[in-house]
Amino acid sequence: MTDSQSVVDSGDYEVDQYRRYLMGQTIIFKDSTYSLIGLSLAGMMALGLTGCAAALTGESAAEPTIISPSEATVKIGCSMANPGDYGDVIPLEDVTDEYGAYCHTTIDPDSDALVYDASKVDLSSLVEFGFTGEDAANAQQNAVRFVAEEALDSPILDSKDPEALNTWVEANKSLFSGDWDVAATSGVVYNGSLPVLIRDGGPRAEEITVAVKEIFAKESTLTPGYGILVVKTENVAKYRMSDEAATEYMMSEDESITREALHAKSPDLVEGVENILIVVANCGFGYDGKGKISGNSYMYSQAPVTLNNNG
Image (cartoon, rainbow, N blue to C red):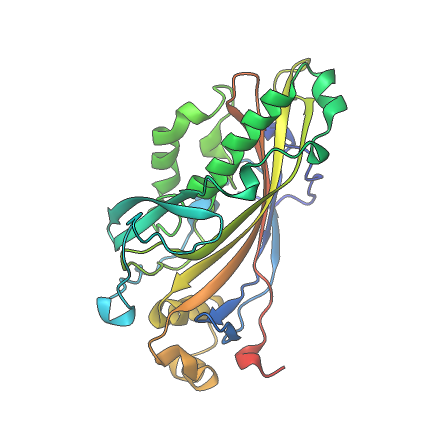
């Protein structure tokens, strides 16, 4: 894989126009008080499409961290009797994978992200390509649900399996246009750069918020003369990590630091309280006339950190 030397405008959603933004900075907070605990490597990469599937699934040679029950307080699973407060998502189903059990989430039916707001819709572009307000509303529903269930909470969110993306694509290929090679692209789901998150029966994210930014239509570059509906969203996910996972994650981004030195700088990392890693995700999905995803655009960013909140 070779790095692209340019990045196209985020409005270009088609696969032959697509480029990837990935800001490599991270923000890690301690528990719900969100005092800062660590500093990670900053950087930015712009990657082209060709051969980038491996980059999405991650290239870590280290064994994944298995979170022991002693490192996290066991929470209730996907019980709708006590669903908890997780922002714009609610529990959907219990999942058990190679790392343990967690609660997969979906969009809350009462989320504002599902409310159609004509002020965010470019009606003139819809008319130009033969779409209606109902088409836009349906695309919004599909995009918001996909962001909540898959883009930010897929089964491959923190998987270290190099074949995870291809496996996920095979299971979900009915969601995508047949002329788009999803497996050859990045950014459809967020994965490959997170540590193994907490497995205690609860959601892997303490909170996920989803907001629709704009909806418009544009010409498809895959099928000239035809339009696609684009739904752009702005989202925030607060992922839960154990002390051990946070330690290994930070050490992997700064190979010069030892475990002892890191713990001396960040003593909170040995107190047994869960940590929060915040990801800001700007996602866009283009839908064809059949309601299938035919393109995507994204930027995932993690803000820089001030060590131990000491300036």
